[in-house]
Length: 236
Image 1 (cartoon, rainbow, N blue to C red):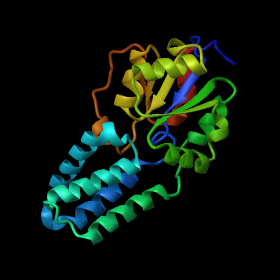
Image 2 (cartoon, helix red, strand yellow; image 1 turned 45 degrees about the horizontal axis):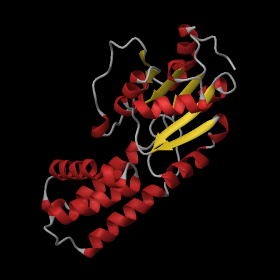
Image 3 (tube, rainbow, N blue to C red; image 1 turned 90 degrees about the horizontal axis):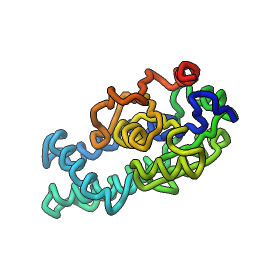
């Protein structure tokens, strides 16, 4: 195990929209949702109400497709004052099932990067969301063998990273977190003492948007995951 790279021994990777596509399927379903309820409001208004429901329900349903589907149903009921037709509820449920069955599409540079780093560092997949769905995605992605450990968590915070990097590595100070969400992957990891490497995705859920911690000494930003190996060399 290589620990010479600024004593870095462990690298955590986010999954959705870091290793494989995810948000685009939510956007497609949101568009379908807006079409189903078009007579009850403009798309922007419907999306705003849906986002409010999603945020409100995170503490109850958590992150993931199932909670998103329930939030769509709740929003449809609210917007129609309880008069939403059963066929609309049926189509919302069908859209949720379709999302849960959608094939996994890995992002560029993912396989080669993980292959290059496996064995040199402890690689840990750190993802939040529904247990069954995240396990399905990982299995279908074919990336599971690259990881020394997998952590599927309800949320990502400073204590989350402190706990995971202590359990699977040498502590947060000798760890790095790589992901597309500043709010979930980068800021709390840096707060825990880790490196935070931000790899933006074209689509980001509004809930996950925060300012870049540009002044943080351990913050880095890459255009794509293929640049990670060179970054690791430069840190050494």
